[in-house]
Length: 94
Image (tube, rainbow, N blue to C red):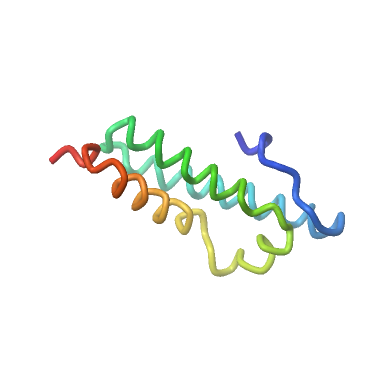
């Protein structure tokens, strides 16, 4: 899926560095999702889709470089999961 992300804008050096950061953060987010193995598959599918949208919305290389120390993959997982559960409370299984 990472290979399908939109191209980044910036200098060639920035783009190369930001792509490494973005790839690592995506892997961390997916790893975090694996920990949630008890979650309903539909919930995890929606969380992944929401994370993907968040990644697609940030196409400036500068964004990834400036924020990589503050944001780990889980920083995309958490808001995506919260949004999915807020908009699909039936997935809580309660």
